[in-house]
Length: 447
Image 1 (spheres, one colour):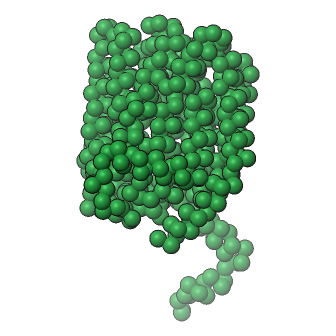
Image 2 (spheres, one colour; image 1 turned 90 degrees about the vertical axis):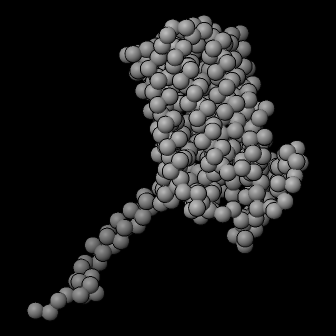
Image 3 (spheres, one colour; image 1 turned 180 degrees about the vertical axis):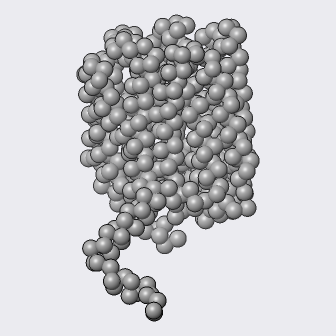
């Protein structure tokens, strides 16, 4: 009997079956492209270490908000804690960007993550011994904010060195999925553990979680990091302020970056104040307690997680229109949530808010990193963070003050209106940004 070769076997198969098999293979490849950046060993170490650490961080954020309410039941102090946690970003993130462009990023991340571990340990000791006071929380929140001012621009700029330009878009989207998976699991687990064990174990778990990311950073092979093309040879000759001015000059004269930062900055200032609002919605509007707070926080995070995975799977090119549509959807859904007083309805609305927010911020982050030269990336990202994360302290204080004067739904509504206006204005001014983005894409392709 003669063996049947592959060609004759394929001819013997029905055409419909062959078509189904090819379609199945295409679908499998489509699913695998969602995680294409994980083929890089360094990025895998970074990704899974961050996964554990960020879940712990969101659990602590949930516990910290609940602890402030237990100690003070003050919306203003809750806003002040959020402000102090993000205020250092406004002051120091630009210097963090300069530092990220000058020193080995892995080394800087090891330092910042170790300091964050110490902060979490101190918080746990204060809570477990029953000696915690509101001023402790305020001080430690400020310390964590200072750490994040150096950590965040470095961490985001480090992604390109781990995966290279080919997988940069996918890695940014996976980072968003990572943050928002933590946002799903962290508040949900935090709320349940608070109801079961109290707040002290949350801070201990966060302390332990930092070990995962520190070990992952130690295991990264610096010899296999991707070189950064286009790096300036005279960077070290520039003073700190000259480097800052160079980054700011680029942002101001690059229409794409300027529009993205402007729209996202307004939304961060007025719309992204969930750490202030959601505990108050849970207690004063829905009367749902800590478990209810955890679940509505998880609904928002679940939408963000699905959004990030969808963005990673799509791996689409940066688009100004896509970003502005997401900003418009975020604003409308936030206003709808503010007007709704039904606990069940809050789940789909917050799911939609989380979905739209991550589409917007992931697109913004990808756009900025793709159009910015490598030697400027840390500084440009730091400007983006200054406006995005640095605008949150003012937004938290504003939200806390408005909630004190009115109530949480009215404050949420007032915050949603400027977001809607920013999306409309951005749409009207998008032409020059789209032209600049197209020119940058051509230049990057040639390079």
